[in-house]
Amino acid sequence: MTRTGGRPDLLDDLAALGPFFAVSTHRSGIRPRPPWHPLSELAESDGPLTRRIDATRAALANRAGRHAEEIELGVAASITQLGLVARLIAPAIAAAATGHRLGIQPGEIWWQDTLGGPVPLSVAAASRVVAADGPLEAQTLLDEVIAPLTAQTRRLINVSSQVLWGNVASAINGAAAQVATRRPDLSRASWATATALFASPHLGRERQSPGPAFRRSNCCLIYRISASHPQGICGDCILDRSD
Image (cartoon, rainbow, N blue to C red; front, side, top):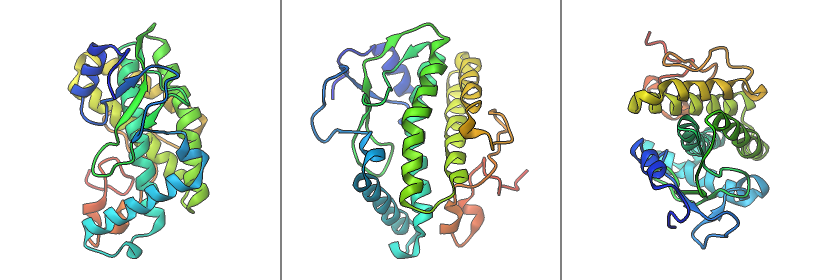
């Protein structure tokens, strides 16, 4: 995938923030060739998301030195959804903070089903917009891409919607925090975008606003893999008692 039609300055800026922010671009309406697949397939059919959850389960088991059957499907489903959501929301928040549109509308996002890091992601060609439009596009991503993916995850595997939407909140806050840390000049804009997304009814159960001290109202469940729970508790988890 080339960066055809994208803005090199924006794409380079995104890549500089880390692998969860980097994207390739394609011309709107053009169907990329394999190994690219439409991200919409994850929410529209059972097979791709089921295979992704199974692969994540096997990878988690291998990392923990356990058999795949010993890893709860709910844990694998939660971690799968969290990884995909974090991958999607990070470039959206960063682009919004700089006043760009990334072309992250439904039907314009393509991915490669790989493990071992952030999945390769391609979006429609980037363009400059009025800064105030940035959070609106991120909200479209939340409502029309992330919400169906989250609903499909819950439909396939019996995992709490509160856990799954807590994953979304964690991903939003984490992306804004990374942008603010690596680009202090974008700190105010990144946190403003995160705050705008937290106004979504989907995130109404979160008791705290986004910020450096954010603590989500639930847990992604990864602690259930580790025999020593503190090793499997994230910094924004409700179970973290370090402070």
